[in-house]
Image (cartoon, rainbow, N blue to C red; front, side):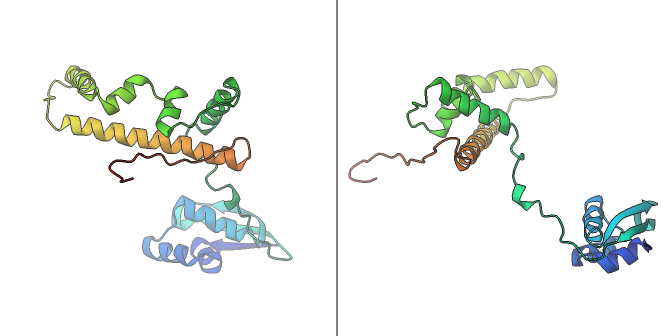
Length: 202
């Protein structure tokens, strides 16, 4: 059994509220919206054939299912593989633990990423003390590449912002890996809060 639909007719029959509004507003669907629409169609039809482009597409649905099936839900895999370099970070952490016979003292996230070699001492030095030296080197490089570049007092703010954002991103990545490895029972991960007292204030 086959049934032919225009894009408008297909959206009317199988489209979500958002897809119907999108078609009404723009006269067409985005690639992602159309893919989602075909997934809905797939719950009632075994296959489909699309001819044409844009709003003039003609969709032939083939093989009516005797019973509507539930759409495939891939949400159980949400977040997996989204972390850039996740496999490499996993390997670095596990290898570090093996090399140290699992005898690792508590470390801060910054110390972890330094120990694993993700960032080097020069970067941590730039973050905490020597940013002036690094700024001079960057300004020198900018001057070589851009003849119209003029040194500015705000350059140091840009460098500090970049370093802070980069460090936050890398620390977040390593903590995400710790949590996933702990969830998979590959490692034991315990969080500790460190602090100090001064004049009876914590």
